[in-house]
Length: 131
Image 1 (tube, helix red, strand yellow):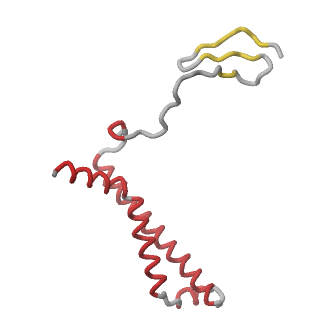
Image 2 (cartoon, rainbow, N blue to C red; image 1 turned 45 degrees about the vertical axis):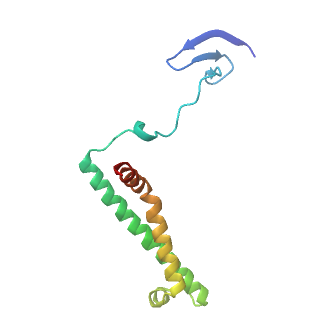
Image 3 (cartoon, rainbow, N blue to C red; image 1 turned 90 degrees about the vertical axis):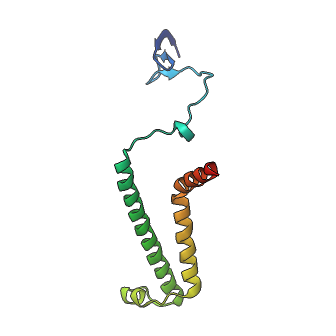
């Protein structure tokens, strides 16, 4: 395989052209890889304050839908455990047991905690700084 001595310089790297290659190949560099996530004060702000409220409403609405779907799936599983055929009538007539209700409540609480973690952590930091 013959290698062409031509090189092409770009903003980020030098590419060495290979006659037999479909695309230019990048010469390995010793530079550190870029961060994938912005952290702390480096986090970019994309939204205006009025957009944040709208986004928060959309997020809460989606969380409500996900919670409803989880409950519906759990109801189907409960009907299946009784050995009855899973029909619309059986699903609507299903009586929720207390242990199953407790599991659902814990799942809702855990989901809220995970999704709202960023907000709650910021509030806790503000409270700590206020002390």
